[in-house]
Length: 500
Image (cartoon, rainbow, N blue to C red; front, side):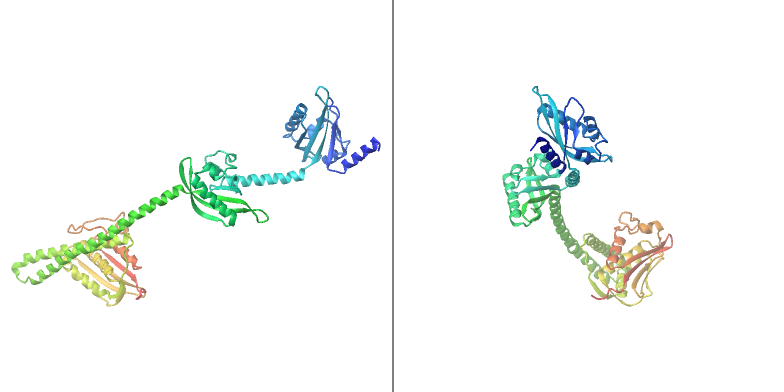
């Protein structure tokens, strides 16, 4: 076959492929030869652009010029084959990606005399690669910004991926510093063995480990990690490694331990409180009950007018003991409410009888202050509530009314009911209150402390206790008052609390 025929066959083979060739016959001159496919790939006719080094340079993307000519100069200096990717501008103004290769010939002195090369259109492949690179960078950014430690291990337990939280936890600045390392390279021997056993279990069984506490040591400091490990499978379902996710919960564990210790202390305090309840409820109230009982007995035995002074003194003793007993009861109930230890013991009882019993207990106080204590609009009906606690509310209402009433005033107690509630009201003609004091009346922080008309002092918890007790029954307390004209306190409790 003649050389001309062979050349034609080469040209036909090249034209039938994606390879475009060029020839720079003399590097001292600018002229080149481009194959027809070269023009075609760029959208030009052969007569529309001259084949020379200047035009080739003008077609390069500005960001690729230095790269291409730098690589060409390196090739001239070293003789190493040249192959790189770059962009060329088409006639339409768009840039397409090509892979270019070149090989120079040199004279006896090692100077380049000519260069021949080829270009291959890789634009479609490059578009896919760039998209994959963009997606990879986005995914990497997301992984590195996850506060949890994320890593991937191969079947040999070596890390092949680690996000920023993971490699920084181990004291590294870059991912490359931790890749290829096993737990034995990073942690204590015993701790590493435990972790690697867990890895092996996941790799062999395919069963994940979820949210397990793991202990490790880094630079002599112990850490507690909340670890999850999941098998990593390929498209055929074969396990090729594992994905690990861990969170540093060292501080949380410290707080949990502190809370556990605090709860133990609180439990001890609670037990101590219960003992105090027992002392107050029994050891203190028992002697007070004895004093009250003995005072009543002695008072019933005094008939002589010559012993009136003794009778008065015994009455004072009895009233003092009664107030102390009531105060202890209020303090106990208040403490139980604050600790959540107060439970209701509901029964059916006559509210009128309870009111009369309470009035009898406070009759001497009313008599000593010269106040008329009356039970008006008496209506007899049964209520379902905690009798003792309702009696506490009634006693506090009446005691408060007596405290702020003067000689000659009247304190009137009444009970009634409507379709939904039963009501108990205590009305006095005493000093009354301003609107500001009414608003502050049940406020724990701003409760107005005020002495009675005869300088009586109170504990400051009576009305707040009443409010709590009313709410425990699903009810409420309302107050109407006017300075200088007295006050009315009303307890309202729902009727639909039938026997349970």
